[in-house]
Each structure stands twice: as C-alpha cells, then as structure tokens.
Image (cartoon, rainbow, N blue to C red; front, side, top):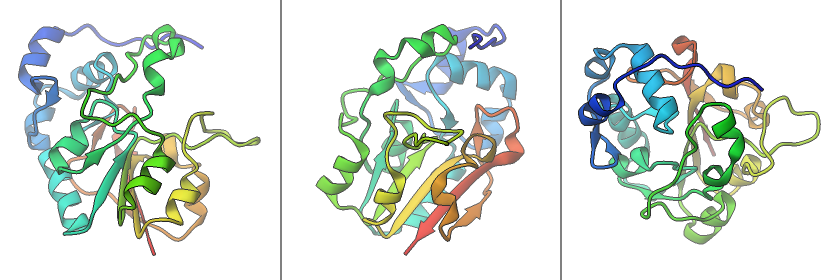
Length: 208
C-alpha cells in the first residue's frame, strides 16, 4: 500500500487558526473553507481527523438528537462529541497501528476525556437512545470490500438503540452492510471531510 502524498502546509499556522487547545474550534463551513480545501485535507491527514466539525454540523446534530441521551462511538480526537456535548468513546486501536504511519497518515490518539471502550460495550454500558459515529469502519466479514477486524458490528448497535447517526462519505462507506436496512440520507450544509469527492459527503440515519 502506497503512502499518502499530501501538500506542504504550515502546520503550526493552521493549528493556531483551527485549534483551541487540542480541540478543533467550531466555525462556519464558509470560514473553514477560506483556508482552501486542499490545505484543510492535508491538515486533517497530519492531525488525525477525518471529518471537520462545523457549526452547521453541530446544529444539525442538536436538532436531530433533541433531548434524548446520546453517545459517540469511534470518537477519535474527540472534536465532535465535545462540541455536541455527548459522552465520547473509542477503543483506541489506531494509536498502535503502524500501518497508518506507513501510509503517511497520523493515527488517532484519543485524549483522556474519550473513554477507551469498545463501541458495543459502550452501548451496553450507557444504553443511549442515540448513537453517533463519524467515519466508522464496520467489522470485516469474509467477502466484504470494506471493513476492519477491530470495527464494530453495527447491526448489533442498530438493534439496541432508537437512532444511529453515521457521518461519512458514500465513496468510503457506501458498502456498509447495514445500508440494506431502512435508513435515510442527508446532505446538510457544513460537511467537510478528507474524501476526494466532497459531493459524496453524507449522513446516514437509521431510526426505529
């Protein structure tokens, strides 16, 4: 597998503009995009982010969740859950995964306020009504074209919650097995990801 080539950027300057401490500062998508999409994507690769948390995305999630109990799985660096104000969990498998380094990508290293726990165990422990996941890789099954051995069994998560919200990109996540189940697709303003095709950014929602 080839290493990922990213354009040179002044990381310290972008860090100063985008971060508040170690967390992404919430801005409108238009303000973020003023840095240029290639610059943002290069920064995301080097700072272990897959999705930028925009003001529009936070507001959309608040409207969707309402007053219900919610939990984030696969929280990574913790930007999303921190700003949506939900409990964050991540098993932290990427932190010790040399493959990401070989590919030229910084692995996610969840900060202390992201609970290190398996996604399914987290759902059992907290029993939320809503689960949020951003760029979640499903558990690999034989025959899958997309998956990871440490990914969650998302079908089991669906069976235990009222709503599962997945933020991603159909080029990367369009082969999830759970897409066979009834769901809705949303493309609100403010979705900025690492994907080469931003038009494929999408939020999948399963309700029951």
